[in-house]
Image (cartoon, rainbow, N blue to C red; front, side, top):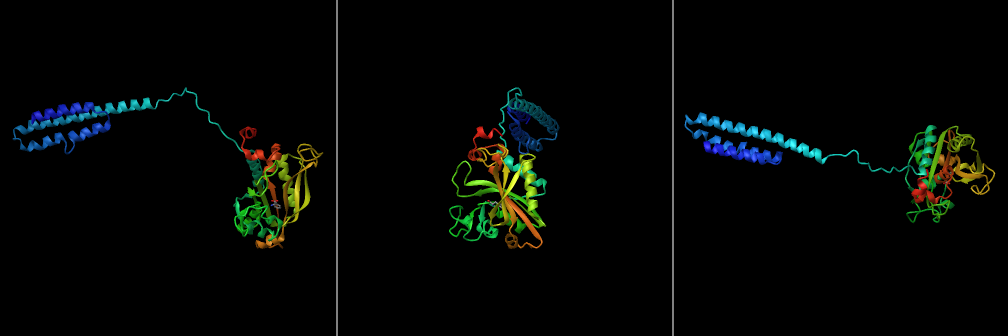
Amino acid sequence: MKEQLAKIRAEALAAFQAARDASELDALRVQYLGKKGELTGVLKMMGKLSAEERPAMGQLANEVRAALEQAIEVTSQKLSEAALVQQLKDEALDVTIPGTQVKMGHKHPMYIALDEIKDIFIGMGFTVLDGPEVELAEYNFDRLNAEEGHPSRDWSDTFYFDEDSRVMLRSQTSPMQVRAMDSMELPIRIVAPGRVYRKDEVDATHSPMFHQVEGMVIDKGVTMADLKGTLNTVVEQLYGKGTKTRFRPHHFPFTEPSCEMDVQCHKCGGVGCPTCKGEGWIELLGAGMIHPKVLQMAGIDTEIYSGWAFGIGLERTAMRRFKIADLRLIFENDIRFLEQF
Ligand code: PHE
């Protein structure tokens, strides 16, 4: 038994020495000192020894156990130090190496204009709404007082999904007026920006997809004077104090009276130049007092409430704001163009 203990001791110490990492060392600990380990196996045979032999052998066995445990302790310490050194080496970071520059993008000019418009209206207590681009004719036409047969419903102008012309890509953001009336408590003050679609050929001022911002107010005693006052304030904030506007009579099925608003040409100051095609004014938006029929279809009492609405072309606003001559530049995403803003 004495020889056996000496053999285990020598073997174990050599094996511990050779362990390459903590898990190998742990496996060895189990192999020698575990419940079914080699040393434990020898200790179990102690019972067979005579009473005289037992104390000396017991002491020796304890010494071997203590020696192995201490060796494990020391080796484990050594391995973890080595592991740390290796980790530090692997993760070494040279802070003097020049970094790779991150190229930051920036806002598209049209979204700069949109954010300005939103800020102005939010400042006046309006809520910003979002709505579907795939719209029902019910909202895009019927409830906006554009009955079957109205020219704006023609297949040559509108992208329909079905034979019956009930589902479509919205041709204007005005259906958001109806959606707001259906879902919000009175009084209502909203702006609703988004994409709209029409069957137009692409040229310097047209695109089959473009953006509008719808605006609407419904409250007690709202008049055309409120519409003009609000829009004049917005235009002055967008284009500078003293910017002149002009309201011309127009027709929309869902407003009565209806108008278009022009802004004095920023290039010539109203004298007439190529930018404004000699007019001195540039058309910016359509607007009007919401037609009583539209309010009534939404269940709003027209004896108490009235409202106004407008729809502004966003590309056109951005073009004016940044003096961009061709609409196509807004959609082409040419970096050389976009970098200028
Ligand atoms: N929806 C109209 C258009 O697309 C604009 C408009 C909006 C007119 C609201 C009046 C009121 O031309």
